[in-house]
Length: 268
Image (tube, rainbow, N blue to C red):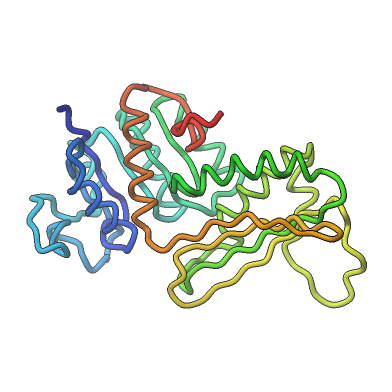
């Protein structure tokens, strides 16, 4: 069996450790590198030490050292770091799986440009369940195009730095696109004071941050006499790790191009 040689960015963090454990448990994958920022507490330690194992892969802040033996990079870090890592991947033909959120338009354009030189799966949420939910939302939005108000509620742990979540924004984009709307024009991200009546074409967002919530998302279609809620709740980051490995397997047969989890799951 051919082994996918995978490096992990943010190797000392919660998601990085989940990815490392998933790679170690996958029969078709091997850990080829572990990357973290300068000053990270885990630098120099074996990447699998938290599992009580020796992977023979030290955590480093050197791109050359972390990615020198890798064919894939999985990155769930911060936009500025991810773009730096992606530039290296594009130059060296390393395929990238990006779960980082919070990119602005310029960052998304940079990802698209890099995908002309290497293969990239870019998705704000790698969970298989979330991405099936996206397909359900597309169908629901088309059916509830008239007479239903749409609100998106998301909740995450206290350490999350961006809001609304990338997944919530993607849900909004899926719904808006199905309705022939532009989320930049109809998205409502804050309400306070005397706001006036709700614009029926708007898509509202509500954000909750607290505790150790891994990730909850609900899209509410509220009509007269009924309401429909489509929800996804994550109880473990393992779903993101497993989805990332599925994305790596998808990229194994591709050299260039920009893809998302809808492509990976054949939901186009």
